[in-house]
Image (cartoon, rainbow, N blue to C red; front, side, top):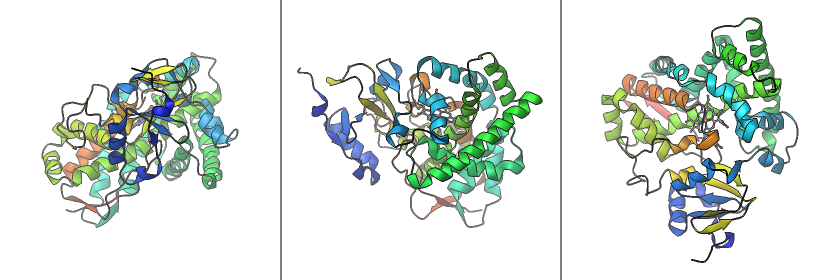
Length: 401
Ligand code: HEM
């Protein structure tokens, strides 16, 4: 077979994706295993393309996307430059190891009773009281309050902490130029706050995550103060919009299928893992995993030259018919989820917060099913907009008594 080149790859249009991204991507996948975006980005559409991320043929994008937007200095740039997510090789390992050692599965799993308790009380307060803004009043509260608890942030600081999260989470994605000043102002304040938390624990160690994280970082004297602080901030930001949107969209898909919702309400603990696995697969909050090819690489007969940006589309990989039977069917009892759920990425950068995200999502959704089985969706079905982290458009529910 003759080698296929970039020019043979069908073009990907960003515009129609908003309407029904899954239908659009299904059509693309039927044409070829790869698609070509307007900015020269190759979009890899199959589950097996995750190998691009686990092997050394690609590297993580560093500050390039911010530079493309004309952001080459200032608080947003400094955050991206010091974060583990946007680093490669040894630098990435040095930043990640102290976090992954301290942010351990056991500690995160221990958050389950807290997440369940928190969700139950948030729902109980609103039971039988009419329409509820689910995204802000429930789904955003759980990850923010749990991470505040892990970091030892006092209750009285929660309102300002949540405002900083809402503003600065935007630093991870495409920056709306009109929002840059607000994001940067909040980022400066948030940095100072995290810095003071670190100082406090250095002065008066406790038995908590930050104290342990600081002890681990102390073993690597090459980590700068900015790097240490940025990883804490990175944990807060990477875990907020992702968990919030996943919780809302999973609940929406359940409520739209009364048979599956009532099955879940009848056995919340038995089905919570299946519910979360399927919610994260069916409408993933992270649209893809972008990288840059560092060598010429062949993918399914196409040669992609070194230097080409390549993104593995999670939206597409998670509906790959080679992996998932009837991929367009939402089924909380499906048994074909791979051992490593692709929504959390793959390889060196695979999500550090998976255990925490799962604990929060499973326990919060099970608590809602237990406390408010008569929950209904009010108004339009929510949508996840296109973007690296797909933002949810809003969602109203009623928790009828
Ligand atoms: C449903 C929820 C979540 C999803 C779908 C998700 C997904 C992902 C994905 C796909 C990556 C890899 C990105 C890449 O390779 O380019 C990632 C990395 C990361 N995630 Fe998550 N995440 C979630 C929740 C969380 C939570 C709760 C935290 C922490 C509190 C967290 C912290 C991180 C961090 C720090 C990284 C960077 C890891 C590295 O670069 O080595 N995430 N996440």
